[in-house]
Length: 273
Image 1 (cartoon, rainbow, N blue to C red):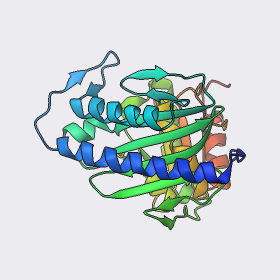
Image 2 (image 1 turned 90 degrees about the vertical axis):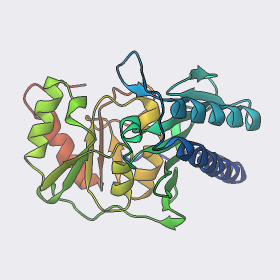
Image 3 (image 1 turned 120 degrees about the horizontal axis):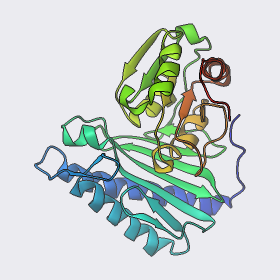
């Protein structure tokens, strides 16, 4: 089911939207300075790569948020959390797709989400190299570069195009489930990170299935996907939140989502919630 709209004063919501886009503008300028330049790549505790670009973009975003909205909390991929018990919490992923970034591939983005009392009410997917941006606000149509966007009309699993960032993100049981789902769709492709969900919001692909995502990886996607007509949940159909498992499925519409979740839950060895 879609997330129910959260009531926030409309003038304040417009202020937050404008601020989020200004943040994305600033992040775009800064991150592009480092792209396809020689940068040192460090390895984090979870074996994922990180660069100075990740850290500097997040630090800049955090400073701007703290200056403008000191009462808001911030949770970021690189620099942890501050005020995570606040009513409003910003989630920041400065470079979603660092492996693409360090290998010169342009499909990496910046993700910004704003949560109100735990619910995602605003999401931004910004692709700096492509100059493409999706903005979603709870209960409103999502927009791509200022124009309304729509998911596809595909309602049959057998006709769906499905994307996932990498098969390496699945454990053995998840991979078996993913392969079962792959056998039921028209085609599958890998790569893309957050861009997959943007393509889904624009109607080019129909299904995205992933695992191992953190809240800053996925909660910005919720208002965008839902505002374009799609549905995004965990693998059991539950709304995404700060406590979600990291298993994410996004579909162009509720009927396609229902079929995919049913296949996942009926897969041999799939654990029930």
